[in-house]
Amino acid sequence: MSLPNWPGVIENYREFLSVSESTKIVTLKEGGTPLLPLLRIPDIIKAPISLYVKLEGQNPTGSFKDRGMTLAVTKALEKGAKALICASTGNTSASAAAYGVRAGLKVYVVIPEGNIAKGKLAQAVMHQSVVIQVQGLFDQALEVVRDVSKTHPVALVNSVNPDRIEGQQTVAFEICDVLGSAPTFHFLPVGNAGNITASWMGFKKYRDIGRIAALPKMVGVQAEGAAPIVLGHVVPNPRTIASAIRIGNPASWTGATNASVESGGEIIAASDEHILEAYRMLAREEGVFCEPASAASLAGVIAYARKGLFRQGDVVVCTLTGHGLKDPETALSVPYTHISVPPSREAVLEVLGF
Ligand SMILES: *Cc1c(COP(=O)(O)O)cnc(C)c1O
Image (tube, rainbow, N blue to C red):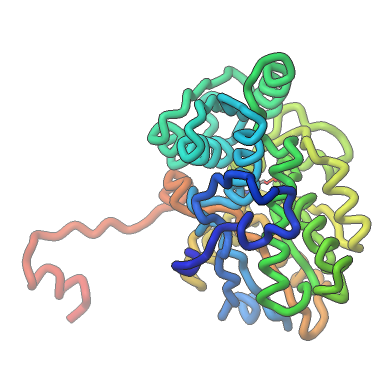
C-alpha cells in the first residue's frame, strides 16, 4: 500500500522511462510498496544479516506485474492498440485485465487449463477479460499468443514486451531509494525470468548514474521441478506447487543468466518442500502472507544460510512477488484446527482455557 499521494511508477520515475510529456499514462498507482525488515527469521535461520522483504503483493492487483503493465498498456494505447493479449500463469492476466479496463481496451487472457490459482482467475473474470483456457501448459500458451500478436492487431503484454521489463526495473530503484545503497544480495523467484532481468537492469541504471556505488549479487530461485536454467535445458513438463514459476522454457533465459553471471550471483533451485517451509515461516513468524512462488526467494536465503554463504552484516532483500490471497487453496491445504462451538460465552471461554 503506497502513500496517499504516491503517483505510480511512471510518474515517480519518469526520467528513467520512455514516456513523453504528451503520453497519456494508464495507472492504478502501482509501486511504492513497503520494504519490510524481517524481525525473527534471521535468528531462526542463524544468519547474521539484515533481511528485508519487498512486498510486491501490495501492488493494485496483488503482484509486481503491475509495474510493467502500467508501461506496457500506456505504450500500447499510445500506439493505437484496441486490444491486449497475454499468456499467463495468472498474475499477468489479472494485471492486464485491470489495466485494460483503465485504458478502455479489450483484454484476452490465455491460461493453462485447470492450472491457475483461484484468486487470479477471479480477477480476470471480474475485470471482464475474455478468458481462454488452452489445453496445455504456459509455455505453449505463450507460443500461441506470440504468434497471434505478430499477425493481428492485438498488443502482446507478456514480459517479452520490452515495455514490461522497462517498467519492472522500478522495483530496484525503490529498494535503493529506501536503503540508500544496493543490498549485498537480491533474491527473487524465477519463472519466465523477466523480473530478474528487469531488476538487474534497474540496479545497473542506478549505478551508471551514480545513485549507488556497488551492485547486488542477484540470486534467482527456480522450483526444482521447473528449473530449466539450473539444468541447462528446457523442461517439457514443469511441475511445482508454485504455479507462478511453473515454466519450462523461460522467455528471458539469457537475461537471467546474464544477471546472475555479471553480478556474481547464481540461479539455484528449491524443492517444493523448502518453498512451502519458507511460505509458512513468513506467515507464522513475520505476519507476511505471500503466494508460494514468492516464497522461493526466502527458500533461497534459507539455503544460503544453511551453507554459511552470508557474511556478518550482509544486507539481503527478497522480492515477495505476489499476495498470499491469490492462492487460498494452497494456504488451506495443510491440516488446521476447526473449532466449532455453540454461540455461548461459556463455550468460547472453555476454548480459551479459562
Ligand atoms: C510472474 C511471477 C513470478 C515469476 O516472474 P518472472 O518474471 O516470470 O520470472 C514469480 N512470482 C509471482 C507471484 C509472479 O506473478
